[in-house]
Every structure is written in structure tokens, then in C-alpha cells.
Image (cartoon, rainbow, N blue to C red):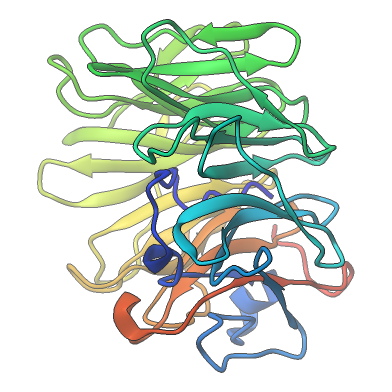
Length: 384
């Protein structure tokens, strides 16, 4: 499972505060939840519980007040950020073992904060760390399975960088920014760094997801021409392809890709409507059905079976709720928890992960700590 609590990517800034952490709790939804609508797990500040999906309060680093889960791998190792002591603004990268033991992953020398973004099955972790007291800039790093931090190379002139995703071969992707440009990056543990090509006329590009074949998807950064975001794909040889758009579309972004090369994301139309979209391996687009009455939908994940997950609303301008789309593109709402429930990733067994905002909103109080929902492997139906 590659949980992107931001994508998003999308990815949370290093200056995230404890108040933002307290506004969302990590939950896990299952295929059973999608079909039977029970409330499985939930925000730490709510009373939602489930016998079939008991919550595991992962806690914080010693003395910490809040934590936020970001990803969990095949062997139940979780990563996230946690405050440490009374330093509520300084979020530290943390790793929880299957039995809940928490480890401070540390920072680069002199750094004050760090953020892990993704973990693969082998225990390699992509992320970033500050190198001083300032939270305004960060440097791309990875942690090896022993928890040791390694600085990734970036182009000269880079002011901020982050490694945001990786595949099972520990090929990492991310971005390296200068004052006027965002460079899409690919790193390998043996081959060093590669600056991925960008569309002419743009201010760069942002890679968001990578599969085990080395195919990367993402989006352009708006520049002079085109002046809006464009969904992109890079193949394993770093060749760039612009994913096809639909008539009336003014911008698009790809958020996830599966092993077969199907990508999903969103497209914005000149009418102001945003719709979830799926591209086939050749880059041809297909709109995914919205919820009845809704005008907004976004796809954030896709598994090997082609099941897509994301968010959609059921009324124009209404709040987004977690949904999934079957392989025919038909939308199915998922169980909700709190005022707004967001699902951000799905694995090949139909497990989904995301977060829920409490009904009383971010200012409603109550410290949220990272939760993990554990399931018996054979208890869930597979989606087809």
C-alpha cells in the first residue's frame, strides 16, 4: 500500500503544524466496508469502532502530543510523523513496527524536522529532512531498512527537494525546486539522480507515482504555454508523454499508475467541473462516472485489478466523500466517518487507506494519533 495523505501528493509541506495533524486521523476501509457499509475504524476523536477491524493506537514518539500515519507496507511496518516532547511545530519521521514499537528516524545533521512519504516492502523509505532550524526548505532523503538516513543528490541551485514515492526496487521519485522551476526527479540507489524532461513552455513538472516497471505519472507545473497543468507519463527510459485530454478539458493531472500502465487522476473542464479520469496504457482517456447530482470527482489510486478509488461529491459544491470505481467505471460510495472521509490508496487485496476529518472540524479540539487497522488476511472478498 502506498498511502499518499497528501498527494498528493499531494505531499504535505515540512511546515505542517500539529493543528493540521489534529485535523485528520488515518483510517483503513476494506472491501467489506464498500459492500456492507459498516463503519470500520475511524478518527481517534470519535467513538466509531468495529469488531471486524479493531483500531491500534500507534501512539507518538516519547513525550509527543500528536502523530499522523502516512503509509504501511506489506509486512505491517507503518511510517508517519510525530511530535516529540513539547515541540508541536517540529514533526519528526517515525516508523512503527508490527507490534507498535515506534522509532525516531531522525534528520539530516543539524536538521529540526523530517517527513517520511512512502515505504516499500523491503523497508526503504522515501522522504525529506530539513538541514537546519528553518522549516521552509527541505532536502530529499531516503532511509534504509536499518533506519539510517541518506541524502539524495539534487541539481545545482536547488533550494528545496523531496523524495515522494518509490517502487519495490527502491527507485525513488520526487522533485527538486529552484526559485523559478520545479524539476521532476528519479533516483536509483546505484545510478544516482536523473532530471526528468518537462514539457516546453512549462515551469517544470511533478512526478506523483511510479510502478515496478519504472513508469512514472504526474503533472506539469503551469507556465506560459500551456498555462495549466497537464497530465504526464514517463517511461522507464525517461521519455516523456503527454496523456491525452478530452474535449473541453483545460487541465489535468495523473495521481496513480498500476503495473499494467493504467493511470488515474482528474481533469478540469472549462465549465468549472472536475471529473475523475482513467487513462489506458496508450494514454487514451475515459471519464469515470460521478455520484448522482455531483459535479466533482478525483481519482487517487488504482490497484492491479483495475479498481479505482478517490473522492466525489453528491451535490454541486457539496463535500467530498470516499468512493471507488469498478473496472467498468461505475462509481460506488464507501462508508463515511466524520464530516469528510477521504480514501487515498488501495492495494491488490482491496484494502484502502485514507483519513477522516472529525464532524466538528479542524478546530474542534482533541489530539489525534496515528491509527492502524489490522485484518485477518482471509476475511475479505476480493473486488473484481
